[in-house]
Image (cartoon, rainbow, N blue to C red; front, side, top):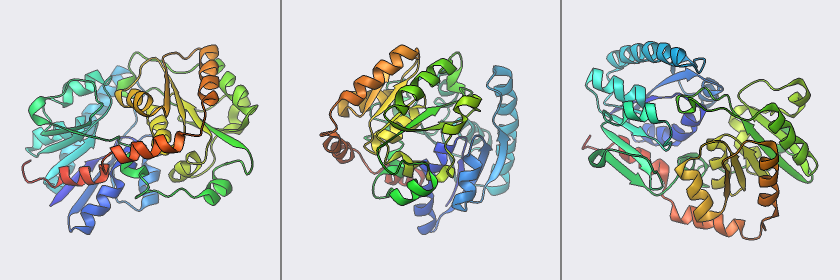
Length: 344
């Protein structure tokens, strides 16, 4: 069979990469469409994955999103007609689902973000099958939804698929040779699920950096240019090596739900500070204590949240992380099974 995977974000590359390998090893064919957003194209190129870039990240305004939607869907429909895949898939999946309807192909959508209300309202009613984590709190179509025990990030960060390399993190990614390293993540807030939201102010970012640099080395992973006085903290390593750095950090602090979740499934405590949360972040907080969810981006509140997180004893983090892995399925196997199901 032939699978077409539509990639719109760097995290989607990681989510699918091991399933692609399993599909190809089993004799299936994989076609990948990509989007020029942050380092998504660079990640695909680094993995040696052939792909067709169909659009570039819009400016985050409704008009820009609308223009990209029309252009990308038109290009994806053309690719489907040319490649004739048996199934389309995507994370969030609006383009895979809509192209599937237009081209009469089944679509399998994976998602975990409840507050992407517009995208979900346009996608879920027409997707052939929707896969969400057990902790997902939003509406889904009952008869076409499959729930699984796990988190997206386990598709690529479960120990079966990822072994962190300390030497690589030291040589190329900015890990401190001695003492603690803290990874800070800021985002552009231009995704469809970011409509009406705003991220950290420069004041908040500076306050976080100044607090953390008293405790160790600070590295900032960012989607947008930083002020000149913070430029020296920017992550300089290859994008495909960021997880090697994260795995050896003392903590991760940021406004990216994905990177915070990645930190947690690696067993690294994390703090998420933003106006809205996610079901999976609250689950990682309530069930395993590996994430602290803070519904504020004010400098004082974020710094106090960091202090509380770092005051918690690390002695049981390893046990909590082990319990998380034990209670979660192999998400890559779930992806493979979903895409090869005979009942689509």
